[in-house]
Image (cartoon, rainbow, N blue to C red; front, side):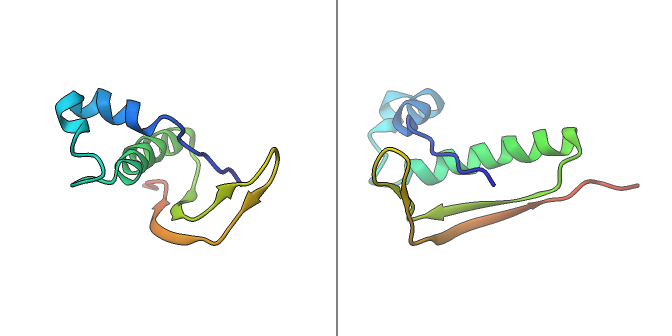
Length: 87
């Protein structure tokens, strides 16, 4: 199992929507959710190209609480099932 934490969400959003759009972050858009959606789309395409079937979960809750420790409670925000197109 992999856990990926995007640590530069604001910079990613700034590149995608510009400085003016960045001002909307937190007011209209949830930057973390938007970056996760884009990342899930890219991962889905890459997984299909490599022949990987997977379930990708977007969750809210885990926190790093020290060097090598994660603290959960999880709330699932979204889920994407990646299936191969079998002909």
